[in-house]
Image (cartoon, rainbow, N blue to C red; front, side, top):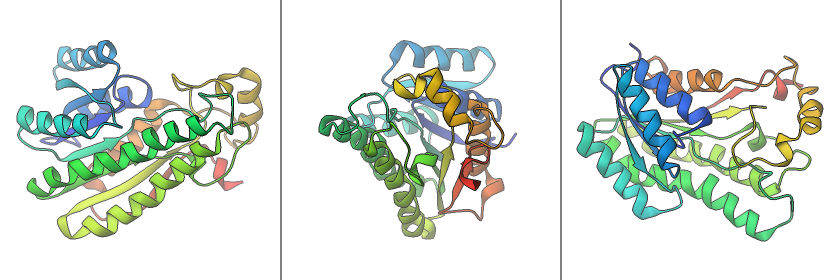
Length: 250
C-alpha cells in the first residue's frame, strides 16, 4: 500500500475532495485524521473508514483558528504517535458572495484559503520535523494562475498565495526532509459554498474552455494528492501539479 505506516491530517475532510482524499489515503494504508467544521459529516467519514477496516478519527478544525490547529496536530500525534502528511484541503468558493468587490468577502477568502494554509504549515512542521520529515500538500486552484469572470478577485489572490507560499515552505524545510507541493484542480463539481459557479449556464460556458470537455472528478484530484504525499514523489518539492483537463494548456 502506498501510504502504509503513514499518519495523515486532512483538512476539509468531511466533504468533496477532502472526503475522497481521506477515503483513498485510508485505503492505501494511512491512519487518517479528518479535520473539518462539519462535525456530523466528519464523524461519518471517520466511521466509514473504520467500518472498511481502516483507522481514522475526526477532529473539529476551523482552519482560521490557531487554537484549533494546535489542538488538531496535538490530537493527531496523541492518537497515532506522529504526523507524516498534512493535506491543506479546506477552502471556500470564490463565488460564495455575489458581490465580487465585497471587502468582507476578500477578508473571508484570504483568512480561510490563504491564512488557513499558513497556519496549517506553521503548526504541522514541528511535528513533521520530529517524525524525521514528511509531506505537505496544499490545495490551490487553476485560479492561482489566471483570472476568471464572476469570481471574486480575492479567490484568485488567495489561491495564488497558496501557490507561492508552497514554494517558500518547500525551500525553507527541504533540509528537514519535508516536501511541500501544491495541487491545482480545474473545473470540479460545485463546492458546498459555491453560488455563481454552481449555475448551469456558467458551468457550460466554462467547460467549453476545457479541452477534455468535462469537469473533473474529486477522486482524480485525490489520486494526485496521494502521489505527492507518497514516497513515490520523494524528489519532488516546490512544484505545482495541475489537474484541469487541459484548461491551462490553451
